Length: 471
Image (cartoon, rainbow, N blue to C red; front, side):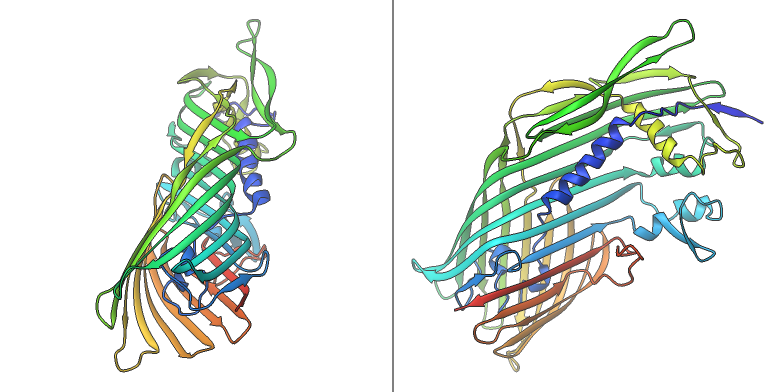
């Protein structure tokens, strides 16, 4: 039986721990998301000013804390049911031998993307005055993006069948901050209305992990690797934990120290920044209206930057541990996926470069461009087309066609269809706004079937709800 030597390190892997820290940061910050595109053309939706600051409400309002505008979204081009499958009535991972390599790999993209966004509205008020419509808002926001190359899944699924793997461009990022926003919408004339929102940003945490290179060559008696990775973490009280291991041939082993964990001693404010939203509406005719907005033009200056890095390309060869290529062995690829993950992570044995001082990061700006047409014979019905593009490394875009209906003063709704970076989706909004109350529910991406764990099988979902008091 042929054996191939692969380093399977038993210590906690630095990369796995760092990525887990990123996900935990997002979950604990709990806090940023896209705005609801389904509500862009809906009369009575009070938070259209967050999508386009030129849009003014007919009524003043005050939000109920935390539930005035709760917005949760996840999106990606890799679905939950790509990773977990049903085999003979039981849930199993893609590593199950009953799932063919061609079936699994055929459903993956070259770069598999996952995005998670949440926004919690702490305070929001809208009122008329100063020659226009004004808004004040306090939001807590965060986002997470992870890009996983297809070659990483290939190595996990195929094992040592291929001699060389290029596991490059694996990256992850998380951002958490609060904003205090002041907006104003002003009517220029009967056709044009403009608006702007100034935001003061309070930085909570930012982590950017870029694993730019991992070229892995498997051999019969050893494996070699060339890696390059850097993690920049601006988190108050964060330090890296180190581990020392001996590496090298017998009789010539030398100590090797690297990052294997992290520790956060307390949390708190860790930076400040500014951002600006700009928007405009133009009434082309009585039935046609054009609009555009550019959101989150800004930056945050962070107080620290705890950096861990390979400090350029790192190359090594090792034959320290043996991994069995026999699928029936106790230590086969399919049975030892956790250990495999740890072994892969040791490719990026990062050095603690300490605090590199202050750093500045930009926000991911969003561009909206819309057009709406109101039926001249039935003013309660309109149709809208909206393009939304999130910029930056973890950006995305979609085009959304909607039918918007306001049959009576106390109710409005929208149904819409979108296509873009993460495929097609069906969205909707229902908004009930009688005197004294405004309640809305919306989904830009209707979830469909859920796994037992409550996750959408498609990997895409969006939910938005709010309860507000108009006056």
